[in-house]
Amino acid sequence: MHTCAGAAVGLLVTLALAACGTGMRSSSNPTTSSVASQSTTGTGTAGATGTGTAGATSTGTAATGTGTSHATVTGATSSSTGHGGKDKGHGLPAAPAGLSQTAGYATYERCQGTCTGAVPAALRRPLKLPAADGGPCPITINAQPASPRQLPAGLGFHSVHGSTWETAEVTWNVPGSYMGPLLIRGAMIGGGALGFGTGAVPYDELQLNDAGQGAPRIAGGGRAWITYTRVRSGGCYAYQVDGTSFSEVVVFRAVA
Image (cartoon, rainbow, N blue to C red; front, side, top):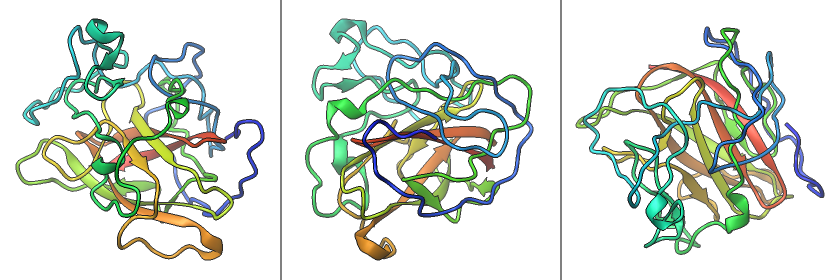
């Protein structure tokens, strides 16, 4: 992972992860709605521009899912041609098909402190995720500065009553050297949606600012958040995490 220019952030948590069966290749065309530079990976190339960002093109305002579809969503990140690719009510990109649109910081269920507003527009960089090429899943070994704590080689997901989306608890943390907000988005490598939250229909992204309720204490003034990642099926997935001074990709294997 390469941070943006001027970042002065350090490694907080080392991930011990193994490869999964779906592989990646690097691609050069960024999709229309997210970030940044590459993360350090165990194998393969993580952080390269991806072509399998979840979602479908929409011609109206933001689309929200009903939670009833079992189909894998593929294609480009959704956009709304009626409002320049953004939802008129929130000024945010339309959610990919099958997901609900975020409401900013308030969408995070464990929000405390700053729970109104949203991340700066500058954090919404184009997504640059790995693309499938038939090789092994390029699991991220050292994520920094934003790190998922205790993320195993295969992150276990379990079913949620009344929803087609399975869930796994993931705790994120950043060191005290970074005090800005986080924007977390992602997709299944090769095509498929990744969501967040506890609802029957997950949100399309996660926006974090002040440390979350019930989160572990981080030495040196760092912050942590207990969050919930949602998938429809097992496979190889990637998060893209954007801060004011960095952008990173974290690749993991979901076991559902």
